[in-house]
Length: 231
Image (cartoon, rainbow, N blue to C red; front, side):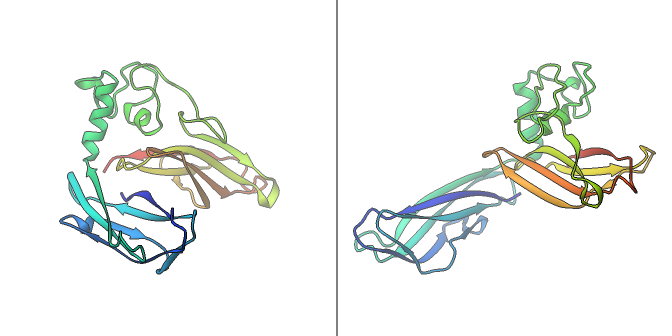
């Protein structure tokens, strides 16, 4: 998964700062990409601009590189910025979570329910629930930072939608697949389609809302799940 961070370029001088070039150099330069918009980039005095740096590590380990800015700055061009990142395995991320929850051995398994609350560890990990205790919370509609997916209807008539909202853990390697069924029958759940809205909640989490058109006059029943799987 690609992770992104913002590099803010501020002009503290008295004249326009013109960034004419940008490059990523170093042994791990190939693991970092950037989006600086159209160059040359002009930044007025007292203003700032954002350069987005993306990282994707092919294997677990530490990575480093240098971002080099070329500009009309008389004494600081090129301007070098050291950057670093780490890539970890999906298994190590999950194991770190179970360890922090005090789970070891069989109770730490993906499908284990050590507190007999009906919620498997993997679901607690995926939806930011408490792995060290019983936790059956459901996500608050339109808000909240922890909880199982919440399903609802919105709109009316031909404009009605079947809506799911859920948290998604960034960089976890988990696949989240919202599905819908009209009958709850075996094999009846199919992936949802429709308009997806993603809200950034910080470095670790994001909120996903998916609205699937579904006219209650012709499809009166709808059941939803969010399937969570590891690679």
